[in-house]
Amino acid sequence: RKAAAIDFPGWDPTTSALIAEAEVTEEPELGVRRDARGIHSFGRTDYEIRDGTIVYKDRGPIGVMVTEERVGGAGEPTLQDLRDALIAVYGTDYGVHDPAFISRFTDMTRQAATYRKGRVLLAGDAAHIPSPVGGQGLNTGVQDAVNLGWKLAQVVDGTSPDGLLDTYHAERHPVGARVLHNTMAGTALNRPADPRIDAVRDIIAELLAMDEPRKQLAAEMSGL
Image (cartoon, rainbow, N blue to C red):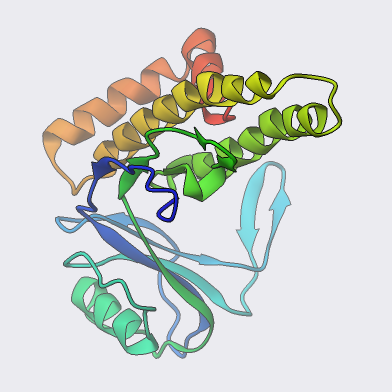
């Protein structure tokens, strides 16, 4: 994208969080926590479903997500970054050690101005970067590939003219724009605890208890 000089307009990150899987020496309280900084959570990665309920097993690594006080740097996060973030929120790092992985995600939101420039075609993260809320970036990237794959094949083997590839941008760019719109809304709903945001979350939850709004959101989150 950069080499092809394709613009990538959008919004810089306003928040970032660390996500990791690691061992701990002190058992944290499992579940989601909201505070003035944002949303945080602990969960056992080893669990089973019993009668529709998640039952965590009392062993193995812990999955953790913690919102950082400030937007993190572009470099790879370290174990010390994770410890500092946990202490800032929980007052302890729970003796976190031996991480299987540590990564950082943000709410940066950008979309390529065009998905095609001559022989350069963009898909997935090269074409759009949303917040990971709902896993929508992955879904959308997969559907980009589905849309583009058969078109490339038909142009390469001469079944269809080169102009068929122009329909890729026409069909997928609006979908990507809608996904970015959805993830920005999801990020807003996950803002730090506030009575006004809580009220919006309650209303959205009521709407999603209805069939039509739930079906509409599911269709959009699929990347289709």
